Image 1: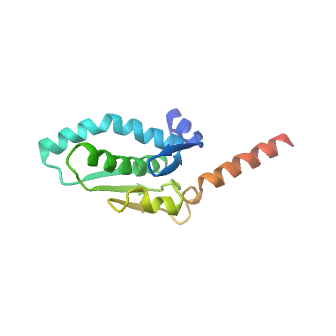
Image 2: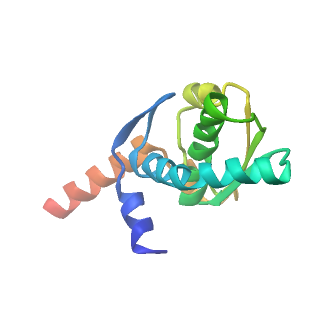
Image 3: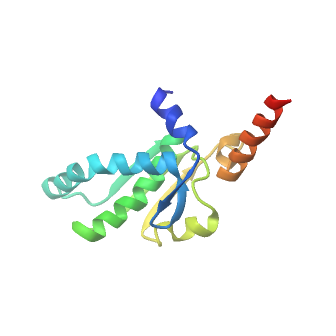
Length: 142
């Protein structure tokens, strides 16, 4: 766990994303990643005849990978050859409510989420985390 990971985790505010609201830290991480990765992916797709793009991540990285996959799909439709995007997200925290998650990739992005039944982080939503922070602050005031 790096200091950068902790900073991304702590940015629990919301950011505006093409599909609605997103976890600010993970969304910003996905945008930064794609800023660097898209030119490399464009070149690799042209040079090697790629047939798909696979994105993967674990925990915080799984949230970033999920957002990056949807953003990557949007970027491809605007500028270069359309390749299927498949994201493998291991231990991904809740990145969007189900109503939003269903429309994030509009059926063009495959996201395979793998979680351990005992991993509580995967069930911790943005709202739950804010409530936990509030209760912790209230407890420390007493």
